Image 1 (cartoon, rainbow, N blue to C red):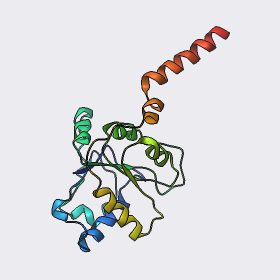
Image 2 (spheres, helix red, strand yellow):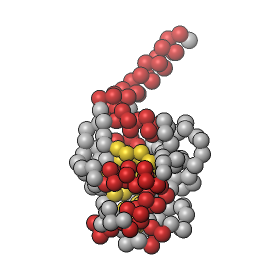
Image 3 (cartoon, helix red, strand yellow):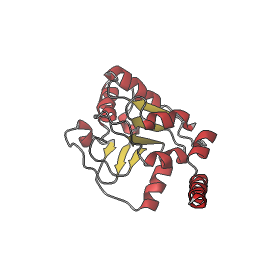
Length: 185
């Protein structure tokens, strides 16, 4: 089971993935009876995708409590990260990336090249694949196949990720900055 856990809204929709899977199924490169894609949480997304009618796809718009969402993510074979892909905005980073990397399961990210999500994943130490809007259908299909063939094992994030995004260390740095400002006042 591959999951996106959290709200789907605006430009964050897995159309790159959902357009690829029917091609891969039709060409018999993947078996749809062994495939399960779940979008857990509210879903303000297009309803025109053929995937919405497929037996391997679930997007029921039901929100779950945070503890349940965390459990579902941790039990997944892989996680789906949806980033802004239709605008040129490259300044934001989806917050769920931090949970996903700490869980350590493979991540499929729908994002832009050199986006913050792309850069964090490239240094995170966990297995990942990025789908970009400018990828050709063949490139997208190859990347989706690569992702689906990654082992579902949990991987420990890199030292860089752990030190860069450690909340305790960041709070200590902030406390030091505040103390330095106070001592100068």
